[in-house]
Amino acid sequence: MVGDEGLRGALTASPYLTGEAFSAADVYVGSQLQWGSMVGVPGIAGDPVFTDYIKRITDRPAYQRAAAQDIAALAPK
Image 1 (tube, one colour):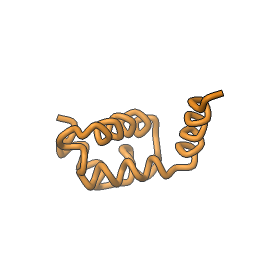
Image 2 (image 1 turned 60 degrees about the vertical axis):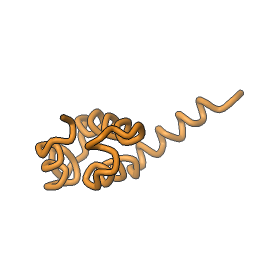
Image 3 (image 1 turned 90 degrees about the vertical axis):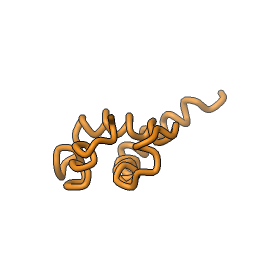
């Protein structure tokens, strides 16, 4: 199960999976948790630990720039 105490415990102990620094693991796991939250996967959606983690990732400037590029690419031309 994705929402096991291992993942939850890691994200409770530190802001990112490998500690204080953002890593490629956060890109992958964060995207999966964000998707799971969006579609309402039990054990992910509404879990405050995962919600806070997703917010930390989506608040990052690089995420904001990438999201803006995605929106611009999808806009009608």
